[in-house]
Length: 439
Ligand SMILES: Nc1nc2c(ncn2[C@@H]2O[C@H](COP(=O)(O)OP(=O)(O)OP(=O)(O)O)[C@@H](O)[C@H]2O)c(=O)[nH]1
Ligand SMILES: [Mg+2]
Image (cartoon, rainbow, N blue to C red):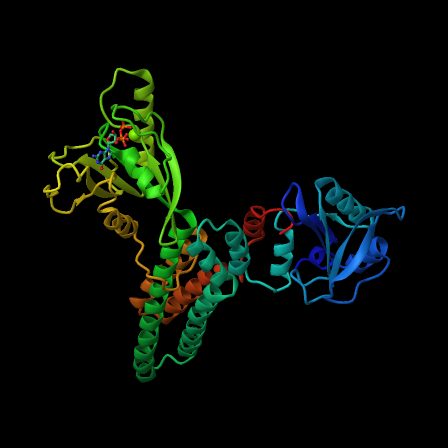
């Protein structure tokens, strides 16, 4: 730990959202918290008890009356002495309480600084600290549940188990480096390979759960595309459960891409309705079609919409790598219509076939977990896991103990980056700067 971390400033911030509210919280963390309590409240409140207090400024004038809670170190969110002042949540009032804290010796906290301190004090590892931000930002029930699981340490524990396995294998390998006689070697080589296979299986399992979880974090981008008037907007409204997009019998109704966040089984998706694809002389419509092409380029899943009773035709500009679901709409008009193999038939008007479409969307997006525990992994975690996986694959074919040991060491380091065991300062800066102030 650098020495400036030992002599940390005491920080203060408004922890509740900006604006009017029934309650507003100012949070102070650092060695001066007791001193600030004495200046504002006249005394340090008893540990972890809610005390009704008058908050006063440096001149002794009353600012607000509210609840003060003092958390002595190390039993606080940051691991430092923490004072929480819960006052009336008016913006001006909160500002004046905060100003009194600054006058009493605190400085304004930076975004994520409380959680960063919690990390430095060993209250949380890096994956858990990230889960705090993910929990706050969770856009769906499933995402929130996964974030909470990571926060409680389930993800870190899975990484920890992998690391323990690696440490054991590394110890075995290091021993071999000292005794390279042939007979011992063969025995240990078998043992090492067995352990290595088990480790690789566990790693693949964690990686699969993390890939699933990353879908929850980023949300799945689903784009509706097709000729004008086939019912794309009607389908969006159905999926959203509300009349979001304008629907008319006029071809070329939708001009601009319309995004709608929806959830299917708690999984967050963004569904984009687009302008129908056709050659158009209308300037606005042409611009809309350009936007359709842009949306298509970054789709995870494309729903290509056709009309029942027609053969469907080739749609230009569909990205080759996105998953595609072909849908024949207006089944109510052609109840005996059978879609081509692999395509779905449905009716946006009656809702027939919509459930099948919802399931198909999740499946196309790669979501397979039926309530099973997934990890709300970030891109950073996926990269680290993939890197660890590569080192283990290299190790499998490595006959030289020194190089075998080196691959294990690198895999170990990659996993350590997830929990912050081996993390550079700039990575920490990058992670915590995305937090809100007061967290
Ligand atoms: N009978 C029937 N009519 C439908 C169905 N879905 C859409 N329609 C009708 O088809 C017409 C076009 O629907 P939209 O949802 O506006 O079609 P769109 O693909 O968004 O059209 P553009 O925005 O012009 O590209 C409207 O009159 C809808 O009421 C359906 O399942 N059955
Ligand atoms: Mg439309």
